Length: 300
Ligand SMILES: [Fe+2]
Ligand SMILES: [Fe+2]
View 1: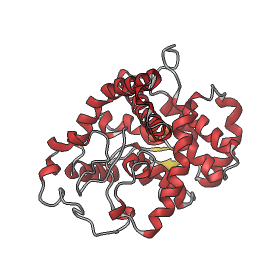
View 2: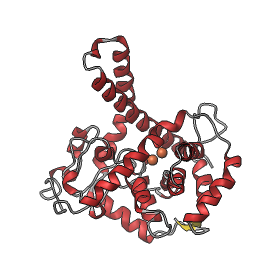
View 3: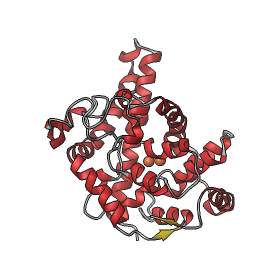
View 4: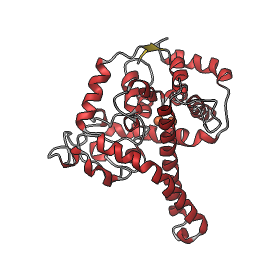
């Protein structure tokens, strides 16, 4: 059943993507034409950016206030203790697709279409099968919407960041963390917080959302390479993969994973305008790929 809150979640998620696209555009433009900030084109680009930002600002205000260490520990306890049943990957894609009502003409792109477009763009570029599969499934963690009744969209979508140490000023709207109880905590507010220098991101607790949830679900239930799992876990970790923050928590190996996540990002962000695809036609090919990396059903 499509729900109103599913629609809101979908719209927020799209707006978050839009801001990330516009941020990249504004930055690239500034790098290419540092003197061009007076042109009309440039001004309108900034206006687009500001408008999109306005729309997501309230979302991040809530996310940054509520993503505390305490909440994140509880989210993991709930994850381990709650039963969410078994489904195949394709069933999960179909369930995710019920997030919004497809018959609504205002809906720009269904969830399944975004997943297929990401996968198809990766396939077109001749990337390995495991990466095509990652494109196909990377947002299945949004199924949290159906399980997460006590919380809200702030615990499902949006950019992610580590908890348990100081929030980086490279995170979008860093000033909104001031009302997060961890912001003034004597340990969590320090540069390293509960972590050791260069401990590796594997040992870092990421803010709870669709990325972390899907990573935890799949970690022991698939044969994807670790680069693939990193693409899933960190695809919304913009302060890291785009802004270069949190290097003090990275180990050597994380640099390889960073490269993989950066390779994946454009397929996620820029495949949305590729035109619509027919899920039924593509299904046999992708079911074949799914069978190579996953058991028939997954424990969600
Ligand atoms: Fe995502
Ligand atoms: Fe996505």
